[in-house]
Image 1 (cartoon, rainbow, N blue to C red):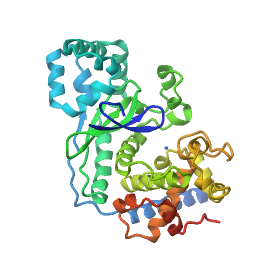
Image 2: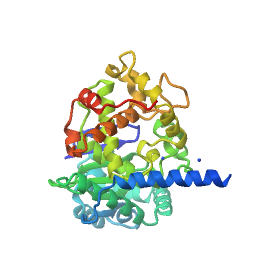
Image 3: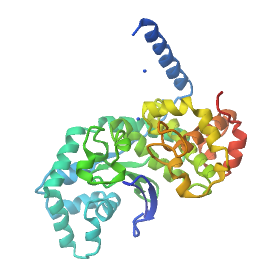
Image 4: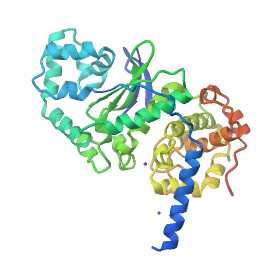
Length: 371
């Protein structure tokens, strides 16, 4: 069974199941209104009509089925496993806290006792109650994901719509993809990773870099669909075709372009996971970012230590002012891919994913930063 886990700790890895793999006067107000209307109209102009596409998105609140009743017995847990075999296999072997300890024993009775003890543990009860307070229902989750996967069906008609499970992992996992069956994938979503930027994550997770302030500001409902789609798109796109900065930034740019296509009304701050200030900085300094990346052969750098903060989350980018965001190479890759697709509108998203020559995409995009 294939699993794609977005593991707490920023990165994502692919593994086999047996290996464990978010600006006073009337004149200003009118200007802002005009800008907002123009931006919204521009987005809507490029949104395809999907009104004739119908998908049946299955969303299961697995945490309710497992944790709502502390008196749940072994027979009911077994029935839950039997009713949801693929997700249960992943959850109880890899996601549930303490799952690693259960793997080493073949005693089914001991495994059930371990599950029951975790269900009744005070921390589990507190975590479940906290999640239920923030997510008393998941109607918004289902609405946002149904919209996104409807666009997914438009752009990727041959890819089955995944089955969705919400759950609790005790701050262990972001959304992850697994094989629901031989025909389609499933996605698990740990709801405690979206409790809001005011939630004191570090009080409950220790000194884990994945819960630094610059990251947790987007651990909220507005970013849940984005995070969920991100891992699905990762699974579709596979690994970068090479280890040069150019290869990775174009690869990430393609994924961001697809993400934007599935969430066409989402602001760029959500797509890039940037604050408004950070997004303003890269837009104001696009020319400087471009020249920074294209000088001194940086595009062809292969040392991960030298490029990691340019292609992943970070408070800022090396060689740039502290006001800069991290992941600026991915942002620039997105701009290049947008330019390429504007010049080649006949290119479908599956075809875009199939293009492995980053240099050709860069050259044929005709991209140059605005002056």
